[in-house]
Image 1 (cartoon, chains in turn cyan, orange):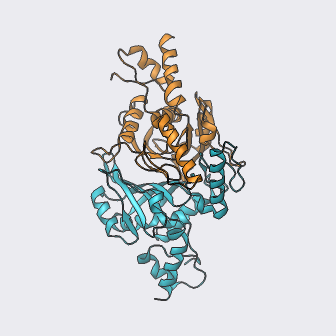
Image 2 (cartoon, chains in turn orange, red):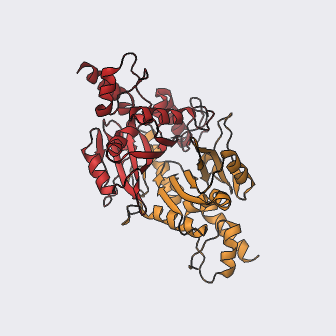
Image 3 (cartoon, helix red, strand yellow):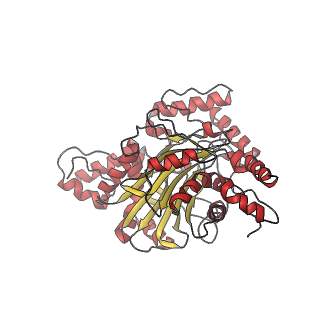
Length: 233
Length: 233
């Protein structure tokens, strides 16, 4: 086993921790949020492929990045030209492909981490993962638009029931009131919010969902606490 | 032929216009931007399935929505609580699933328009399209993260060459400088910006890209001008 198996899904990774010797790394924040709803689905019907597009808040890049969004927003309100220092491009009123370097396979560093860590955490080395990482002008909480291709059929209702029973998830999927996961609701939440659960049109072997999680909590500090708790159990 | 065939891809839709009698509708703004890079790919290798997640600017909802984003940004800068009137939720510092009503198949009105109109414009009634529409705090220009499953292999380099020759497209795909399509660059542009062109990891029958287009131009006014030009030709 590799030296950096993270705990994200307690049911899977608690065993990793028991047999593990060495450093335990906290995973990439997008992968940590993504695998929470993937696990109950994968356990039931096996996921063949994950297509994920992220809407990543600036707080993933630290406090200076949060201050930069705030200062750029102030500049726009006051009629000044926003200055980019932390990020390579203005982020207020804009969005851009995640600024980690593009690697030899055409994916950037953030995207390749999502591929590698999702496979590792789910113990699914052959899982196909196709990520696109995008930074958006949101201060906190990452959102992800997810499409899963499954080995077997699973209706949206069955998926929603599985997700509602899974630990670390709050299903927010209220079509009549138009309430779905939003970063403003996910900020400060320990749970990952999951909604817009639906099959591909006419195809119950594909499942789409939209998720939001506070990457400062589930994606970082809270997950580290969960690892520590599991270690002393 | 239906009574609302739009012109988006001149090569395909010019014939539609010649044989058409009745009202000509401008298409949904996301579909109009999406089909521009899809057509040169589809003509070469046939697209089986399109997975698209949108990052839609507020201007798609009109001038009042643009003013609402501006006023909410000002409220946040001044320490007041932002008020949502045009949209159902605050949009500044936030994002949310497109607020059109969810229909019986689990997709909202905007998403179903993308499915229907992409098929219609490309003359591909069986094309599978899986959209997720999200409103983001950007004043102008829509972005879309796109994954295409193809009938035949097509390398990213071949795809980039096809896109670079196609009308209405500007390829912005400069990994060394980290320059890819952004709404701030697409605003006011007649062309659709296309970048992050890459195959799925280890799979040349899937192709990902990230696109930005000014939905006030290609998605609306400019496209209407193109229709009119084609009619008087």
